[in-house]
Length: 413
Image (tube, rainbow, N blue to C red; front, side, top):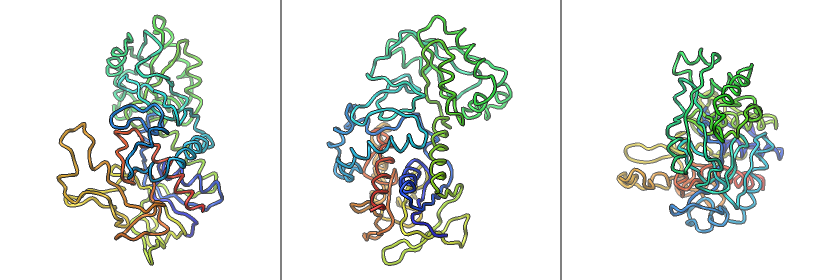
């Protein structure tokens, strides 16, 4: 099978790359092994939340202070500004209703009852302009009987530190009894399916209204709108008090919805999406990748002019740690890591872990390196890149979006 570009990885990075290329008429295929990090999505895309443990107000300005090996610096600050304007437009064309500014972080409520800075947020969720400022004095935190993936006590304790009086209330509904009998089925996605259809939403809103007469705001787990993108809006219209949705333990309902919307957009543009497949190997000749072979296609070659590695980091096995080395498992690409295993981690659990900075080495155009030589048609994007600790920085989604747009630009040139 022949394509113009084949992308290895079907998460945010791979889908963003594929959508941008397909919008320009490039014939693309994505090979996706299954779940991506979007299934852990909290409803917001971070660009840059912290530098040197200090909170960032203006990401575009703070990016300039990052070290030279950081992907943002390598892409270039002028390019970052351009792509930071392009990314939300691409996401909106895919059907994601988002808002936010690259030059001014806003805040969202976390499951711990704290406020964290971020860049773009789905309109399901509330945006707050200041940290440590919650605009209501008394809130009711609602949970469903038997739903263990939303820890209301954590949210309550966090809100108390913000000076907010919070009370926890539980709701039982007959529509949820069937899935509640089995704890493994009482998950956010299954609850969302109940609210996607029928009268469950009306009954739930009525119960919330009855129990929230004495509070200023209502806090709910974000289990609304798996396939129906308007459910959260309908719910807010039916509840008489302001509604604040809070992310829950994965699987993430807004994350899965976002994945579906992005994949649909890619396929509507003519892209081919190989779901539940993974790349086993590829053939390299004269510093070019000629074809790849996947588990599902066996001896059938997938051929392309250009390839993009968007396989993720350790979580998705884009990088693998053995007892002796950290390596890239598909092509054996060069990895920027320490050869001494004892240097991979810091004994301080909450400290910045060295292994989080490891990633595939690339040239200035983000083409992969192998044995020190550039593979001219294999680009690298997303969290498989090194030079950053996205967890500490709050930059993971931003690196995925910005690097994928940068790589797509290199291909289009």
